[in-house]
Amino acid sequence: GAGARALVKKGRKAVGLGNGRSGARFCTLAGTYGESTILKGPWGQAVDLAQIEETVRTVKPKAVFLTHNESSVGFTNPLEKIAKIAHDHGALIVSDCITSVGGMDVPVDKWGIDLAIVGSQKCLGMPSGLVFVTANERAQAAMHKDNGYYLNLPRSIKKAAANETPVPPAI
Image 1 (cartoon, rainbow, N blue to C red):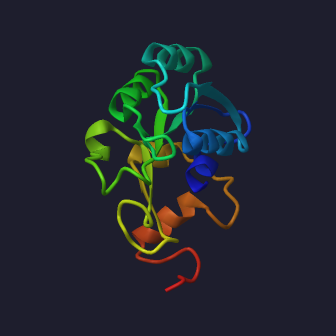
Image 2 (cartoon, rainbow, N blue to C red):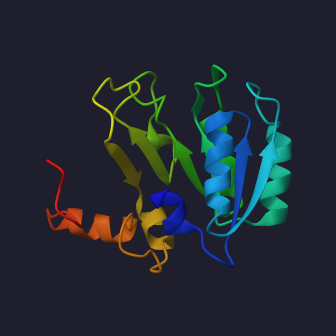
Image 3 (cartoon, rainbow, N blue to C red):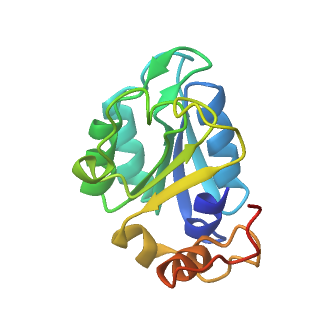
């Protein structure tokens, strides 16, 4: 939620891929903060890349949201190709990588993933409840300041740079 909250707000558009349970939920989440266009495809199948490109070109979103690996349907979206489409049209790429990082190679810097979210409980095999976020400079520069107090990603990044936490840590 923090990634969507930091990048999408009233007046900003998002495009999301809803071809599985997690992706559909991620798109809905982005739509709670701003205007979201959901590209629905058959669950477990890729949304046509030409359709993604046409939608990103015409909608002109701030970000494209997708779930990299849809564990609900056993399918992996072509994240590297979708990231290139987003970037070619000036959009950020935001990916739920919870069930891919640790289970497959996900070179976020090489692929240009602007913001990636990873959870501890899936492929990393750790206790649940921890979330890891990577946000490159491009994503950080695009984050707006109206983020409230909790789940405030820009504030968390600033505190992390100072080797601090935004709120008292749970551990």
